[in-house]
Image (cartoon, rainbow, N blue to C red; front, side):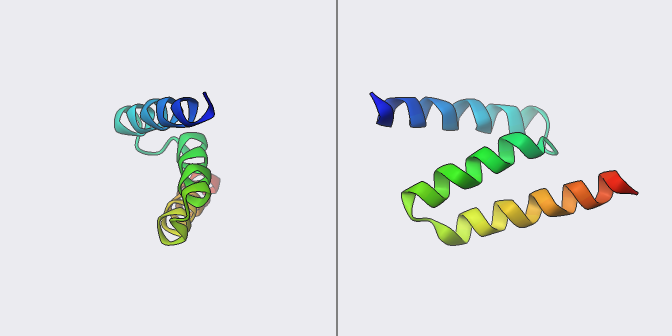
Length: 59
């Protein structure tokens, strides 16, 4: 079931971010999940966080 898969994926991505707050791939996937649910503000917030992480890693 696709809904259960999305919920399970969200749980795993949240656990990943809990263990590694700068895990930009997990944050990006969480942003996609939020966007899919219609939470555009949450998705934008996570994408901005990803951008900050990537900018820091380039320095």
